[in-house]
Image (cartoon, rainbow, N blue to C red):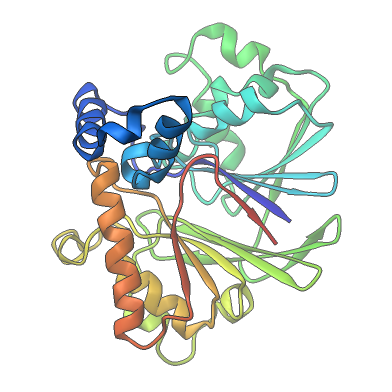
Length: 310
C-alpha cells in the first residue's frame, strides 16, 4: 500500500500568510554565512540544510489522504486536499471514497475535484450515515454552489452503508471501522493488506478509556503498522477545549502504546499553528515518547506530499 497526504489541516483551510512567508525568509537569512551563498551548489546545500519548518511547510489543505494499492484507488475524506489530488493524478476507472464524517472540512474539496466531472470515472462512496447521500449532494446544490456544479458532477456514484466493527473487503484489502468520540460522531478506518495495517483516525477526542482496559476497537487498532491520528491541540488546550472533539499528541501516543502501533503520524493540525509551532509539537511528542520509555514508537508530522510505503 502507498499512502499519500494531500490535506492535513483541521477545521479550515490555512494557506501561508504573507507574514509567515516573510518570517521563513528572515529565519533563513539569519542562518546564512557568506560561504553558503558562493554559487548555486552551496546555495542549494544551504537551503536543504535548513530546518523543515523554514524550508518547507506542513500545508494548509484540509483532510484528504489517498491509498493506492495495485490498481485500487482509495480516498479518505474530501477536504480541500482533494483538489490537489485531482491536479496531480490522472483519473482512474474507479475511486473508493470513504467519509469519516460530514463536517465541512472533510467534504468541502469535492466540488473542486477535477475527476468529479469526468463521466468515465466511477465513485463508490462509503459512510456509516443513513443520510450520507443527501448530505453529499446538499453541499453541491444551491445556494451553497452554483447551479451548474450539481448538474455537471459525474452521476456515476454508488453509496454504500458501512457498519461499525463489521469488516469487508475491497480488492483483497480488509477494511474495518470503529466509531470515535467526536460531536456528531466520526469513524476510524483500518486497511489491511499483505500483513500490513494502516489506520486513519481523524477527529477524535481521546480519553483514558480508549487505552485502559477492554475496548471494542481491538480489530481496528491492535498492532497497526501506521496510524494517522488527530493531535490538533496542545496538552493545555485539550483541557480548555473539552468536548470539542479533538486530541493532543500525548493522548495519541498513549493510544499507540496501548494498541502496540509502530508509527504515529500527527494529523488534523490546528489552523492557527504555523510550521514552527507544529515542529515544536513534533519535538514535544518525541520527548514524551522517550519520557514514558517508548522511544521505539516512530513519530512524524503529517505533511502534504508525504508518502508512506507499507
